[in-house]
Image 1 (cartoon, one colour):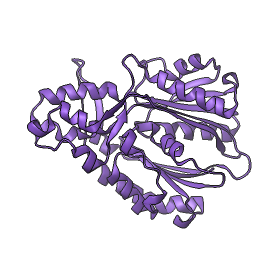
Image 2 (cartoon, rainbow, N blue to C red):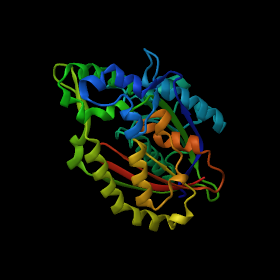
Image 3 (cartoon, rainbow, N blue to C red):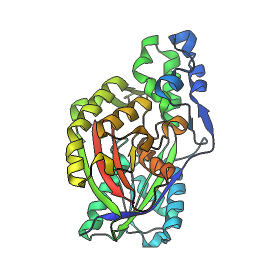
Length: 329
């Protein structure tokens, strides 16, 4: 069976803008930690991010993007075979947030949540890809709602209260932003569609990036950005030749590189590994920050690919998980 294609893709972002400088001012980065207020801007490259209004739920962000994606696809929600929700934040521990999105849309598609940190949406697309290719379903809505601001507020409060060295392993929390995304997948026709997806997981690095709630209900976690970047780079180096082989592409064949974006260093590293010039990367981290599972849809949204474009996908998430693959628009 043929792999599916993207019938529609939409990205939703809240209107409120919060700058990195304002976050650094809030924790008194200059006086308490000896860091310049523009440190996140200059070192990581994230200047601002979007933040949802108080009371917003992850499903709200996913639903907004999903409504727009279904409208773009020209598909009635009742005709979607499956709804897959992939965000890190969820409305409930149970049931799956996909059920909330399904109800919001008036759909009757089979529901499931797929959770895999920042790689979640690509993992969800892979599940939908397999089910469409096997003939089990005809179409799928894969969506996500990232409400990172919820945990950012809690971590910022802890940073204010903890010793100075507490910030070092949690600076990554200053880079994340809120967003919603959705893709509609259907059976492929012609040359467009998902060409191949490769995955790699390394559980030995699970504690490099995590957050959880302690028995007392307090939030705890860390983001060891240097260690994460080095490990992810090594994983991608080991994958890239197979990726190009299975795609039957060379770097010169690639029109766009759409990758997970934590900051400017991570983008630069992935470009070198893939042998792709940075001019082929739609940059999203500057104005939106790290939008976790929404980063790949955001990159495609910003890039505005045209029919026939060959797009290399690269990224990863805590775990550590990594993915590479290709789609033809």
